[in-house]
Length: 276
Image (cartoon, one colour):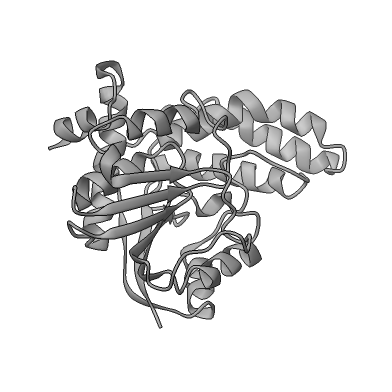
């Protein structure tokens, strides 16, 4: 099945080893959410489309998946969002897909009909939100567009020592974000599961299922550590408003990451909620 999906996504054979691991994780999420064939799905924060493709494959030709992202088509690396959209729309999955960028869900011009979708998905995109308030506003705004909300994000509750580097790397990013006026970082606000649940309940959603999924082969922990080591010493130098002592602490943590021998990703916190 995985081989068929990777081929349907239009992936080149050279990317299969990395993409297979990412895709297996997305299929685990979709299985947890119990999204069936024929469903109509809105994915917010679709990025390069890892979850989007798995959703399109799952719902099949009788279903429909609309992916939206606030970023523009030039965002992302090594494949930009625009390149990913072109690849997916030209693939075997393209007939059941629509992908739009530069879409701010909080902009009043962006709207959908009541219960237009069976499921609304937020998959590993919540840490991109600038604040708890922004997350709460989004959750409230989308409540009438779908029957179920399906959510997944990294769970900072550490279970294994090998997950600590991933946690440290995202924590460093989240701290630095507190001193930046604008950002294109992967981590802008780090939420714990209880923060997310609180925002959901306050926004009028009823949580009916929650759990964690651990995919130890995921490369995301290594990617975040590498990004912090290579990019963030320079970022720290640009932050004149950050106290010197805090800078030194973060630089020490970055230096410690360079000596890490084994990195495992954090588990994913998953839930499904119903609109009241």
